[in-house]
Each structure stands twice: as structure tokens, then as C-alpha cells.
Amino acid sequence: MDHVRARIAVCACSAFLIALLASRADAAEAEPGPRVDDAPEEFTETESGLKYRILRKGDGAGPTGKSSVTVHYKGWLDDETVFDSSYERGKRVTFPLAAVIRGWTEGLQLVQQGGMIELEIPSELGYGARGAGKIPPDATLHFVVELFEFETPLEPGPSDPDAPKEFATAESGVKYRILRKGDGRKPLAEDTVKVHYKGWLDNGKVFESSYNSGKPVSFPWSRIVETWTDVMQLVEAGGMIELEIPSKLGYGARGAGNVIPPNATLHFIVELIEIQ
Figure 1 (cartoon, rainbow, N blue to C red):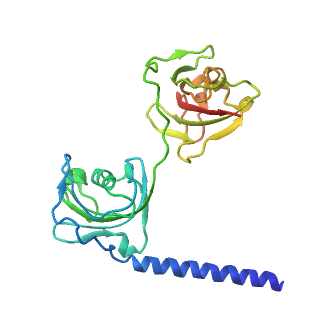
Figure 2: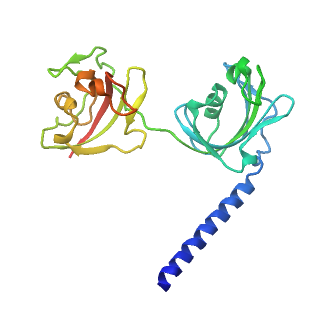
Figure 3: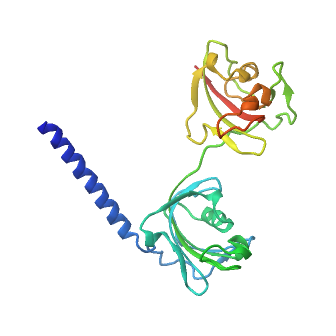
């Protein structure tokens, strides 16, 4: 029992040290970090009307509109009233750029990881005539934002320039078009395949995607979704195919949980990366 108690004590001590270090990191970020000495005094204006200035350059690449970002920020109005600040809460914030106001979506794509940007967002790129909580209608918004890290999900690879625009229909009723021809062989029933795929509904909502995790999926061909089987044998390793599966060949009137509604047409892009 003594060695168990000792292990518990070590774990508790480690947890305390982690919490202490985290609290010190939060305390160190109670205010925006330093700007570079040669940071511009004037703002640059984009075509949309967003104004910005880079207060500190970062390293490497920056996010895209599809990225999720981790930031610290402070927002204020023309009269310098602060309406929101992650610094005051002592905790960085992570969110997808596509889920915020247009001024943020555009502005955060102008700074690199590790950098800091000041934004002046006109009302039409913010909350407009409706306002929001502490933000009055038609308000110009000011922000300082530090970009600590970001993640951008993978996307399907390129299509062939001469890829067909129209779908063909397989015997099963599944519609398909070959977006990219491969340079390997086509899979057989006994093969194990490695694929990347994305599935979405008619309204464009993605219900499943291996690209989000950044890891392709491997499985025996015999266990593949039945409605994929005949059409996937039309594409070679290295190729990419788009599928349109009618409801009767998918989940039908029952749907699938809260993800796929009843009578839904399913759309997929599948890249056949490797036949193992």
C-alpha cells in the first residue's frame, strides 16, 4: 500500500505543478504581449473596409478561413470602453474562424502564428444595426489579437483538369464521377484499402470527414459500405471519385441519429490512397 500512496502523492504533486505553471502562464498574459518597435502607426484598409496593422510579426504560415485558432484578444469601442477581453478572464480562446464575425474571419488570415494584429472592424463586418449585448447598434469594433496557434483541416486533393462535370450512374443506382485518375491498380474484394473521405448532405453540411483528423482510414474491402463497392472498383490507387447516393441506398426513411436526417441523399468524395 505504501508504494500506491507514494504514486498518488507523486501524481497529486505533478497535477499541482501543472496547475501552478498554467496559472503563471495565464498571469503572464494578463495584457497583450509586446509589439515590435517598427510596428506601423497607420492602418491598412482592405477592399471590404476592414482596417488593420500588424503589431508583431509571427513565424511561418497563417490560418485560412477554415482554420481553428487559439488566441488572446481585447475588444473596445470608439469611446475606449472594453466590451470583451480574454486577458481579463485569464484564458486563451479556441474557435473556428468560420464561426465568428466577418471582420475576424478576414483579419486573422492576415497574421502569422505568434503574431499580433490590431483590427478596426466597421459595423457591416461586425454586428451591424442589431448590435450584440454590450455592443451598441452600428458600432465600430477595435481589437488587439494575439494568434498563438491554429489548425487547418486537410482538404481533398486536386481534380484532373478534364474531370467530367456530369455524373454517370452505376447499376446499383449510385451516381459517380471520376475526379482524378490513379496510377495504380483497382482494388479487389480481398484487398485492404487506405482512403481519405468526406461526406456531406444536400445543404452542404459535412457529417463525417477523415480530413478533419488528418489521418486516412484503412479497412478490408469486404467491410466497405455496400453502396460504395461497385463504384469504388472503378478508380485506381491514387485516384479520387465523387459519389451521390440516393436515400434508398443510404439510410432511407430512418436516417441515422442526429447526423443524417430521414430520406437524405448522401454525397462523398473518396481518395483511394493505397491498396495494401
